[in-house]
Image 1: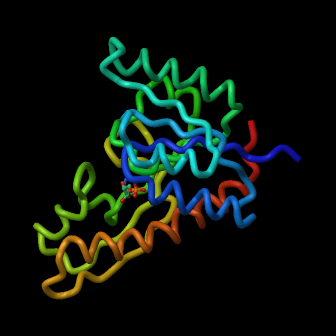
Image 2: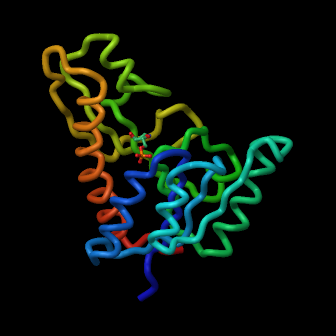
Length: 194
Ligand code: GRF
């Protein structure tokens, strides 16, 4: 049977990319990462893609007239690689109509808060500044809004008294690295192959 093909979208460090790639390599996920899409030439995730032998599509948004134009180019790549699912792992842009229309209910994102609390940038900083006692991680389908799509799964974490940002971020990432592969495993089991 044809393997489910993922494209991971990332702009930064890529720890989630690495976790997913390791799970795939260990045979724990019935899919393959066929492509990494990245909007930053110097993102650390690019070195990681190289290590795992994953093809990359890197683009500079400034080279285009707008989102519709660069998403059209991304779409051509996704079709070339016969991608089934778009996995957003620290991709710091809103997905536009071009990709949403091409991949309806096939785009998932991970966010470091219990949505709908603290959407957008720096969710961990927002949670600390607000002083909530519980935060967490959300994996959700992507729609046109900012972290507003249907929630697939969540896990909560209690913020320790006086906990600093570094510690909370580390503990949140531990959850991410468990939760995201679990959700992807379920998506792959459903065999949503195009
Ligand atoms: C993660 O915390 C994820 O929740 C958020 O961006 C971060 C990406 O981290 N959307 P990494 O690049 O996977 O290490």
